[in-house]
Structures are given as C-alpha cells and as structure tokens.
Image (cartoon, rainbow over all chains, first blue to last red; front, side, top):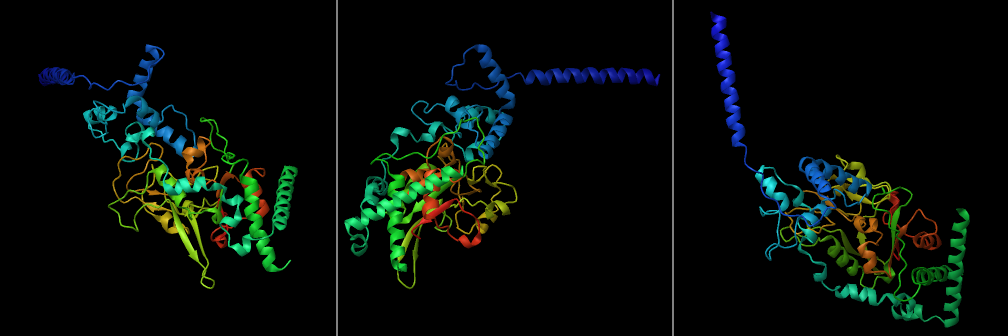
Amino acid sequence: MLSRYSKILKSVILSSLIIMMGVGLSACDSKPPELMKAVKQFESDEIRDAHVKNMRVNHMDELLHKRDQTVIKGIRTKKHSLKACINCHVPEQVNGKELKHTDPEHFCSTCHGYVAQQLDCFQCHADRPNNGNKVSNVAAPTDSLHKAVTESSLHMAPEKYLPSEVAGISQELKSKLTSQINTDIQKASNQSVGEQ
Amino acid sequence: MSHINSYRRKFLGGLAGTAAVATVAPGIFLREVQAKPAEQEVTDKVRWGMLIDTTKLTDGGDACVEACKKEHGWGNDPESNVAQQAQWIRKVKVTEKLTGHTTTLPVMCQHCETAPCVDVCPTGASMKRADGIVQVNKHICIGCRYCMMACPYKARSFVHETLTNQLPDTPRGKGTVESCNMCVNRVDEGKNPACVDAAPQALLFGDLNDPQSKISVALKTYGGTQIRADLGLNTGVRYWGI
C-alpha cells in the first residue's frame, strides 16, 4: 500500500518538475542582444561562422593566452590581440559620436551588460580604435623637440657650444685629433670583427 | 701628455668620435634596430641598450621627456600631487659642490641586468624580457610598490587615479606600477624608442650583445658611465659626460 502511494507521489513530483523546467526554459527563450557589425570581411561564410562560434565561447581564454604571449615573449601577431579586436569591431565614430565602453552599444559592453559580467580590460586598454587620438590630429613637435632635431648638427661644430678656450684649438690639432679618433674606431671595429 | 691634456683629448675625442659614429649624412640616421617577425619570441641573443651623451643634449633632455609623454600618454594626472605623478623619464640636474659645474641628464629605468625591482616583486609582474628590457606586466601587478622602493634610480611610478583615453600601445591603469619600458611596442616593430628619435644627436639605441653595433663600438672605444655603478647592476643605459 505504502509503496503504491510512494510510487504515485514520485511520478507526480517528477512530472511537475519536468513541467516546471519546460516553463523555465521557455522563459529563457529571449534572443541575445544585437551586436555591432564588424569591419572585417571574411573570405567565406564558413570561416566567419567558425570565428563567431569560437569567439563566443573562448574569447576570454584566447585573450588571456595572447596577453602573456605578448607581454612576456614579445609576440605581436594580430590574431587574438585586443587591439586588433577593437580595431575591427568598434567603429571610430557612431552618429558623429565616439563610442566608449561605458556605452551599451559598444561591441563588448552589449553582451557584458546583458549577462552582467564585469568588463575590466578597458580600465587600462583603449576601448576604441586609436582611442580618439587620430593620427592626423597629432600635434606638431614641441619647440624643444624641434630644436633638438634641427640642431642635431651641433656636434659637428664644437666651437658653437664649448667654451672658447677649449673650442679654440688650432685647425691642425683638431684634424689630427679627428683622424686619430677615426683610426681608433676603425681599430675597435676591426678587433670586434676579429673576435667574432 | 699631462693629466689635463689627456682629459681634454678624451673629452674632445668623445665628441668627435660620436660625430663619426652617429652621422652618415645630415638628416640620415642609421637604424640600429632590426624588426623581428611578429610571431617570433624575443631572445637573449640581443640585449637592448642605450647610450646618452649629456654633452650633446642642448635642452638637457626636455625633448626626450616630451617625446615619452607623447608616446605613452603619461603626464596628465591632475588629481595626484607632485610626488605622486607619473614620471617615466625626468631631467636630473647634478651640481658638483666644489666647482659648481652642473650637468643635466635624463634619468629613466636603467634596464639593469640584475634588476632589484624584479628580485623583490611578489607576483612576477616586475619582469625582465629575454632581450633585457625591464617592464611591468600590469595584468598581474597588485600595486604593492615594493619595486618602487627597491629601484635605486627612482624610475617607477604608481598610478593613483582613474585614467581614461589611454593610448592603444600603452595600457595604463590605476593601482599598478609603471616605468620606462624602452618603448617595447616600438622596438618590436623595429623602431627606435621615442626618446632616441627625439634627440638623435645625443642618444644611441642598439644591441649591446652585437660587438659590431654602433653602440657597442662606441662603448668599447670610449667607455660609458653607469649611474651608481657601485651597485653592480650592469645597467643597459650608459652615459657620457657625467
């Protein structure tokens, strides 16, 4: 008797559980948010789909792997580099406005906001191509920079910046010193070649 | 040759020597740095180094500091006080007490072979790349600032405030330590560091392991001074005229 009741009870519980799961799953049916279009055009749809499928699941691992490769080993290929991702996925401007990671339309922020996952990369990294610093807008060299470059021939004329009693050595002595130094350099470089 | 004359000769020789080493034709600067393929790891076959001739820095290093700010985007931290502000490279003025003779030199990370900052780091964030460049891996830096205390050159800074609009090639962020990284991003592309391009008449960048590189020849011929050579750190940055 008891076993019959328990069997009925079990089946009732099970069936109600299944119904509840079904209801729950149907509630999860909403579509993932619409993402911005990327710039890059893939050679074929299969390659693109494989990229999308892989990156949806693995982008965090790929980025983590690549960051160590880059910082520690100096490998700077574009594949899985955050900079390359941003350059392709985030446009420079949207409707005349720069898109920052704090905007929900930003490629990364759309999903991260949707799943309430914190996005830490952009505390340090640029969140848009060139981060709003357009190459063409880079200011002209500062005065000191300009001066340093234009005056770079100073070392050819020591009398210009050396005290006169030091610089005012005779032409003869100067040329003698210069030739002496040139032979020294020649000797040193010959020696180093010989050592190899 | 008296002591003074030999000093004078060495001094002038140094000047003329770099003229011969660094100048091929006006406006053309030989590139020491070869670009490595992007997929290739850095190796210890090269050791990047820098030679700074302070006697030829007409502005004492202002151009270098400006170029560094521009390349890496530091120098805009209004919330921090002067002692806290980031300083990847700075001008240091040294005056000899007896003679009153002053020298101005740019000082940044000296890229030591045995770097104290790497020794003390508890997480391995302060690191030396195989090619001798010392830098901070900010991904694993916890901001403890041990390295700042260990560095005898005061080369490191801590970011005290939230930053925005960082440059793509130089990620910087609050809570991490940072310093000169010899422009790793540029070096990996085969370019000179920004400060070297800003003052090519006074700075020379190259491979210290290659005996034929200009920097090695110049150092072999005329020597080069390390700051605090007594510490035996074998720095990658050497000076003339200090």
